[in-house]
Length: 193
Image (cartoon, rainbow, N blue to C red; front, side):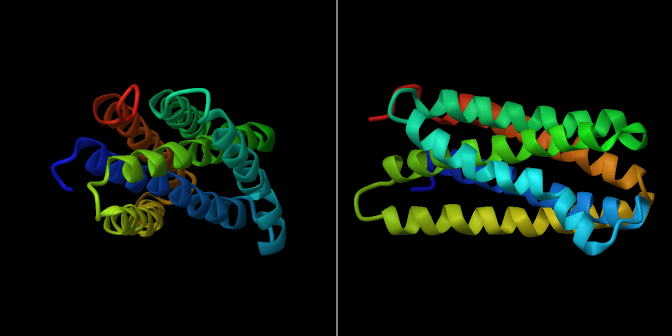
C-alpha cells in the first residue's frame, strides 16, 4: 500500500491541505483577537467566510468529480488555496478585512474542493482488502496536518510576534499547498481506473 504513488501521495496531500487550512484558522483567530482587538465572538464571525464556503466547495467538487478527473479538480483546489494564503502573506498588516476575507474564502474553498479528489484517489488506489487501512492512513495524516498547522502557526506568532508571525505562517501554508499541487501532478492518475 505504501508503495502505491496515489495512496502515499494522496495521504501526503491530505496532510498538507489540513496543515494549511487549520493553521490559517488558528493564525487568523489570533490575528483578529490580539492584533485587531476583536472579541472572541466577533473574531468567530470574521472567520465565518472561510468556514461557510467549505460546504459549497464540497458539494461542488462532488458534483464535478463525475465529469472531470480528480487530478484536475485537486490542482484547481490546491492552487486556489495557495493563492489565498499567498495573498494574506503579501498584504500583511496593510490588509483590509475584505481582502483577508477573500484570502480565507480562497483557502476554505480550495481545501474542501481538494478533499473529495484526495479521498477518492486514495480509496480507488488502495489494494484489495486495504481500503479501511488506506482510509485510516488518510484521516490520520489529515488530523496530524491539522495539529501541525496549529502548532507551527502558534510557534511562528510566538517567535515573530503579530502581525509578522501570521503573515509568515500564511507564506508557509501557501508553500504547503503548492507542494500539494506538485504531489498531485506527480502522484494522482490523470484518468483513474
